[in-house]
Image 1 (cartoon, rainbow, N blue to C red):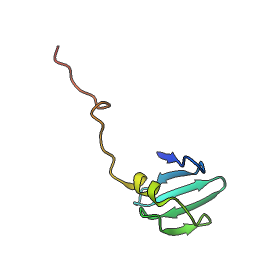
Image 2: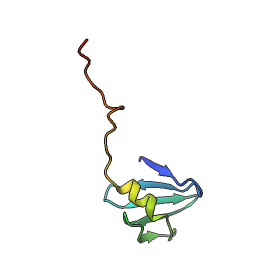
Image 3: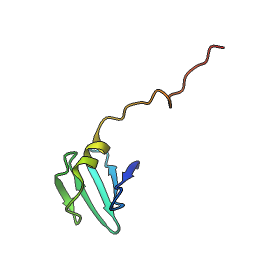
Image 4: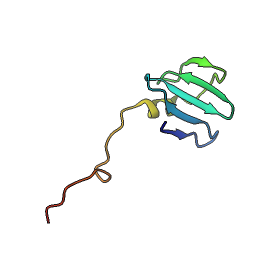
Length: 71
């Protein structure tokens, strides 16, 4: 899965494929909504702003998109 690491805690925030966020911090995991509300798991706290970033729409970057050249 793709995700991002929290800059302070190092916890990994990933999409779970169902619209929720899976947070892994060492050997503890927790599942949260995109707003950071706890759903299940032994990890019961997260950064709600990072949950929103990970769950948000993935916008394409025009600098990274393939384009055809007409030379």
